[in-house]
Length: 354
Picture 1 (cartoon, rainbow, N blue to C red):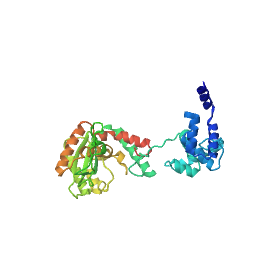
Picture 2 (cartoon, rainbow, N blue to C red; picture 1 turned 60 degrees about the vertical axis):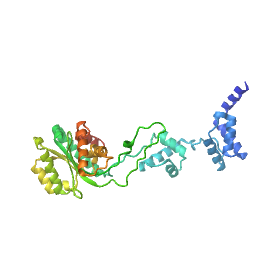
Picture 3 (cartoon, one colour; picture 1 turned 30 degrees about the horizontal axis):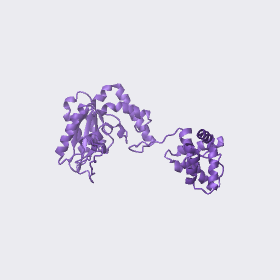
Picture 4 (cartoon, helix red, strand yellow; picture 1 turned 90 degrees about the horizontal axis):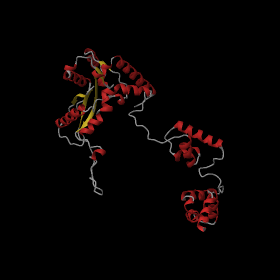
């Protein structure tokens, strides 16, 4: 019976009354840790937490004896709360990267109160920022929208133009590219020691890969010689070799998609393209997210042939041929087919990155 009475008495002690008890403990000269232990002996599992006791002892040490305020700060005035909410919103208009610590110092709002405003009142959640290839200007975003709109218009006029599209781009490939972290995973028994994988200090020699993609996947590529540069003459030779390699498919007009690199836009190149009756899709600057090779080829291709030391270009070429054959067969490199979808998405984002 005594136990039941004691339990009932403990449950009747409010949080506010516990703070008053803490004030007495403080005045007796107890430390926060000692006060918490004494409070637990009295209240059991209903006692304030250790961090709460430390908080109130710090307030008492500052000469603030008011135990009626909530721990987060002064909420007695709804006007004050609204002012704080507005201050937080204004700060977020300046930047979304504030930490609770720095914003609390800037606005002179207790961290717990600030956390409640951000989470409960404004419903914000902190997430990682989106990494983008470049910091594009509003004017460049408008250009992206305009180009994507015109490309969609041309596509809708004759959707088969996409099946006759060739996308061309360049990248570097190395004689050795280490496997990515998830590619080094192994099956291990519980407690079995993991295998150490040392990353090399260098990726080894590299060559430029010039690659063309069509509606069905990767259709042609060339690996440049050591120290060979991609200038207008080399690009023209690549275009001629590409067209010769697909001569049997020249029943329809070709639509070319390449970027705005200087060798791609010289008078020599433009004149030859016109002489071949080749049309160009519009490709805005700083837009790898609208290039099939960037969003749907290069990373996957390098990942597939990585983790192997190649002694010669011939070995790299064999690895590329095997991966291209397999990837084209299973639809892995059919990135050209996604162009209309990506143009529409870019327009919906008002020129922002996908």
